[in-house]
Amino acid sequence: MSVQPATSGTPALDQNIALPDAWWSELKSALGTLATVPTDRESVRQNWVDRNFRRFLGMDPVLIRETTTGHADLHWANLTRAPLVILDWENWGRLPVGYDLGLLHAYSLAVPATVARIRREFAHVPDTDAGRIGELVALAQLLQACSRGVHPTFAPLIARWAQELTHTPVPPP
Image 1 (cartoon, one colour):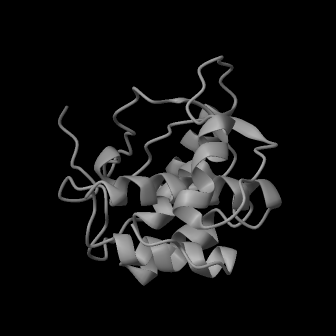
Image 2 (spheres, one colour):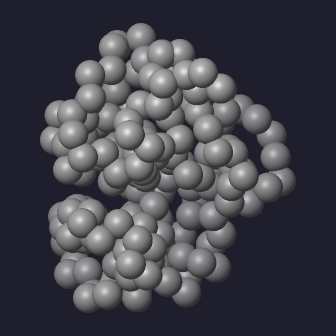
């Protein structure tokens, strides 16, 4: 494939990247189209939430009430610049509304301008109850990965954002 990756190939964004308005529109359109794809594939399960929320977020599990079809691994290493191509589809399936955007947002926490752009472009998702639940599930799964040594420099940013959303201290890894 001869398209330029959005970043240097790492999931977490560590520097500002200038993506045109059209790129953001294409991402919104692609995720909107994906949400309409019917599937029985389940990417995120309620039983994972039930078993792990207290351990990684320090709070009672939430109930996933609204799901959508999503990518389930939406981060910067899986996105290209123009034209936008979303890569790495092995985990796609049903997941909580807001999960994909929660991942992308969390992987952008070191770059406030990109965080603000994601929140602005997709405000209709995280500003809903279902979107907040999806974002919390994404954060819990990222904190699980961090507990295994993945993304060590981003672990504090993810924990801080989770605490800000939940008003609950995140347990130490």
